[in-house]
Image (tube, rainbow, N blue to C red; front, side, top):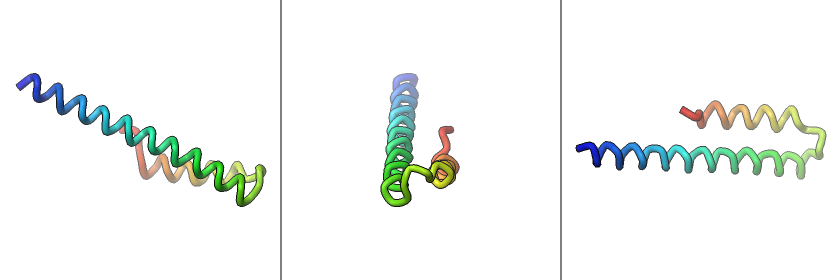
Length: 60
């Protein structure tokens, strides 16, 4: 039984790591798109959108 618990724990950790990596990529994409569309002075918009990503894809 311990082997199964260990496997499931590792699977859960890998899934969480993959989700966090995808979240980071999404936030980088948001920053690049906003910079291209609105120019470099749009830090407030980038922060607002990235905060929304973090709210919808929490770390825990």
